Amino acid sequence: MLGALLKETELQKDYLGNEGVETIYFGGGTPSLLQIEDLKSQVDTVRQNFTVLPEAEITLEANPDDINEERLTGWKEIGINRLSIGVQSFFEEDLLWMNRAHNAEQAISSLQLAVKYFDNITMDLIYGHPLLSNEKWKQNVEKVITLNIPHISCYALTVEPKTPLSKLIKEKKKEDIQQEKQAEQFLLLMEWLENAGYEHYEISNFAKPGFRSRHNSSYWQGKKYLGLGPSAHSFNGESRQWNISNNNTYIESLEKNEIPFEKEILTQSQKTNEYIMTSLRTMEGLDINKIPEAMSHELKSASKKFIDSGKLTLKENKLLLTREGKLFADGIAADLFIDAV
Image (cartoon, rainbow, N blue to C red):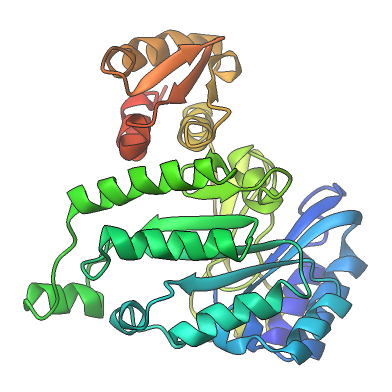
């Protein structure tokens, strides 16, 4: 797999058209399991085939149970300058319920250790599951603030079909999700973190000033990106492509110097709808001036009912979600989509 990734990096060196690389992100699995030398070879190969800007943000996703001083030192030495730590909760019973590999003690100790080596850290928390009372949720958020973690991503627990969790809920062996509880905890989260000085710069993301995720922000700004590995998606401004998900087929193809991917050319309607979906999630909002004139009238007409109901505001020709509107972001975006032309 590692060899195939290196080969794909070389074969894709022209994909971004010689643009400088602003961010590199190791995720989509558990890259913190890799040996330091294996990660280094990935970083070095990217640098050999692309122009990586000196101030590039290089993020590594890490599980709390993979973090120790040796790894933290090694990651820093090879150029990693941002960590994304999958904490999810600081409560033992929650981690067991979510079937996480780490325990509550590791959740806290990994962060306490990480902040000694890295200034730029983000972590995940999950809310809205049956074991999480509002008081426990407050304690989770207060722990983040106390540890001075500069960036936090928070997600409502979703039950995907055909997963073990879905099966257990269906069999009534685990309690189902309550949407009202999720909405309440999201509203509390916004209040607590904004009071603590975090910017709510995207629906699921909060950051201290200067610590926004530059990598994720590039997606929301519609910049080009290249994904490497099985199932990875890429976008060059005109088309999107995605690699095959099967690991063995991926490796076998790269051994023949072939990249196994599918591709679609995006229509103007698709590009516009993607902009609507991503921009509406950000604190900067949806700039109607960036919508093709032929489509902007339809957008303004569709947005009126959400403005009237207090879920959207229109300011300087920008549509912004209100606090209540953020509870319905996906549905509002879908209602604003432009019909195919």
